[in-house]
Length: 452
Ligand code: HAM
Image (tube, rainbow, N blue to C red; front, side, top):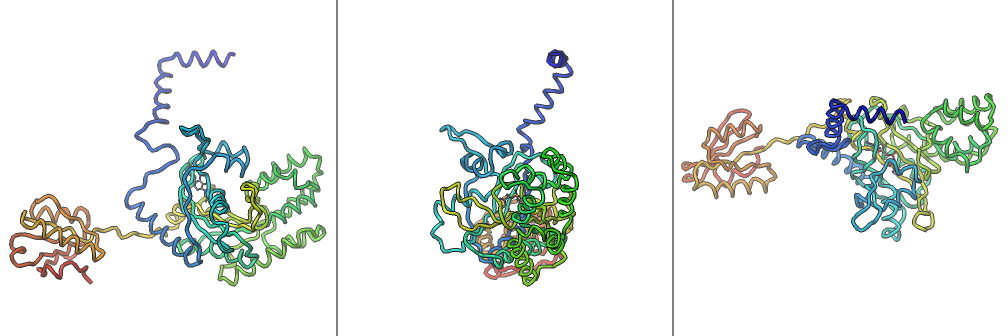
């Protein structure tokens, strides 16, 4: 009641109103891109496309095929997949027909929807990849956006530990081809983790979800509080937590020898990690991490995350694992595994490592006709140069040779091609190299080729 009166009083103060109006304006100023979204300038787009091109090349070399799904989906697809808890993260809305829709927060569920509606008869294993924008109502900061791009893969069909090793090798290769060296791939297995929780803490799988979320966040204080609320003794919890210090498979194997229940998962992990070595993955970059729980409940079996330690809080560049989503589509469960990487985070990591590729965005030639009679010749020359793969700007201003050269200088063009009366009569063009200043007269029919 008192709070309400105070609020009313504040609102009645003229200064407060101004501050409030400014805040609302800052939040809703239509001139600014919405919070958590970004505009990309031409040079930024050129860099993004270069990195994208490298990633596509690697994905193609592993024989993955690209798919595309819509930017928005039925809200229920994601609620059914991840539960009501995810609603807060979603950009959900009703369309004019009253349908509950949302912008996709990720692409695994859409890819599986697509698989079950149209691709299920494709020969297995089916390997697909995607690249596209995702939307999450996250708290924006560097490396975390409300609109961000994911590049991901999904494999449907049995591929076993050998296939899983190759999938992880692909994950590493994507980053290494993009030029990122400082990274750590952490690999775990949810059956190991769940068995440990079951055997060491006596918590059945059905009750493990809240604990898994704490484990996922590495919130050890939270785990202690949760365990004490369940009446677990301190020594039991302490022993459980020491298991989480393991960074090698062998550390944990001895620690849980008495449980014996996770042996199948251990064997699986051992084979994956051994296979990964043979793919040439640098051993120093691969860690066993039993604490990976992958926040989302649909994972099981092998799980993994890849970090770039240079990025601080938003260091996770990639996440994935085996998962079960077939029930959402009333379908029989096929083995499924996949991962997605945060494309924008990869770019931030490359920038921090001074490893961003430099795109070549220079204009090759400015073609300028200096008299109206030369317009058509200039048009033909520009088209011939373009057909040779050159980036050509046709100067449309008739401003004379000096201005044409100035324009070429301004936009840092490599060459300028001048077509005046003299050139028309001699069927030549004057080509000026903007870097060296050298100028030459070239027969028109030889001018379209790029300089060697
Ligand atoms: P995820 O871990 O939620 O997994 O996201 C994958 C990656 O997307 C993260 O590692 C991170 O790099 C990036 N990412 C997530 N949120 C943001 C954000 N707000 N801004 C920038 N980057 C972000 C998935 O989405 C699963 N669908 C991965 C998967 C594929 N599992 C199986 N198949």
